[in-house]
Image 1 (tube, rainbow, N blue to C red):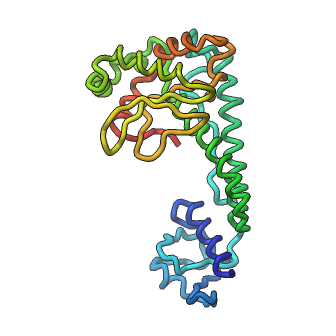
Image 2: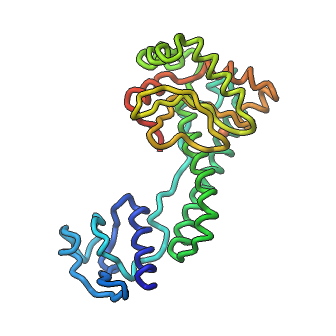
Image 3: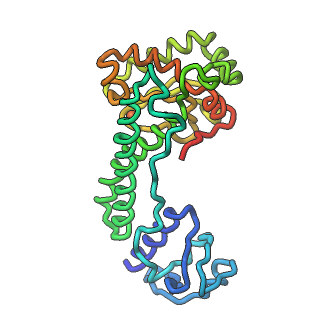
Length: 284
Ligand SMILES: [Fe+2]
């Protein structure tokens, strides 16, 4: 049991700091487990991890071996990344008349901020539950992380995905390679636009519509996700449209079709082209 407890702390730290651990000499008593009986022995930390290690200073330690366990480490969650609300690359009224200043301000400062705050709180709670080996609490928080983490990812992409109407970025000509791929896939830009719009209007309840490129197969597709489920894995979101009511209702009421028609005037094709060419989501 002792092994499991120490290993849990160790593993948590790995994930919490991107496979590296910032440790200070005062925090460390290096130990290893040599059998299933969980005998804990002091080890020579420098020889085990194979790096120069200054016991008096903070050192970034690559955690390449599962035989190293750090005992007496400060069991806080201070090492967790704190997500913050990204600034918009334009003014709140810049997308008018297609999305009003009021919607943009509420959407960004209230809705997106709430996803960020809830994500940070859930990650902290999950880390604490992990340290306590509280599996039920971890399972409970995974759904919260999925929802709010997805909300943060999706909205970060959405803001970068939009550009004021009339700007060069808002013209499909700003995405020549993507446009060629769209025409190859759907026959014409207009056909793609029609199918994408139909998919957006077909979403039941809250969700998102996406133009996605599969990293391995190189295929473009139109997809939808429910709630705040993000596009992840080898599928790269090229364009995403928020179809939650909070994205349009106070301006368009139940006229979703007009919102969708308006959005086509403010898609940022420059960022879409960059995502398409580099196969990177460019957020977070
Ligand atoms: Fe939203």
